[in-house]
Amino acid sequence: MNVCNDHECNPTCYKSYIDTSKKLCKYSFPQPLINATHFDNDVGLLHIKRIDKCLNNFSLYIICI
View: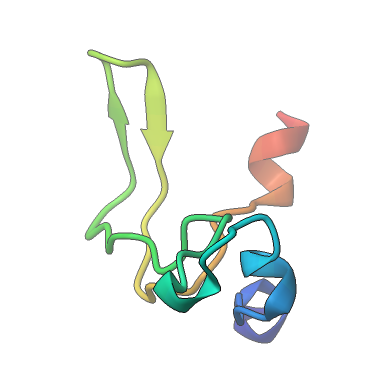
């Protein structure tokens, strides 16, 4: 499953920037690591465990609930 959810930056990630030398991914990768899945009551967000900086946090099971 990790193969399908891995993000690899490509020219599409940078095409909206005038200065492409900064290499800032428009999808916010790499993302911070998260040790455990938890809910943040202050902002109302579910933070899903992430063990790899380039792993998408997409989960079909959570979206379908």
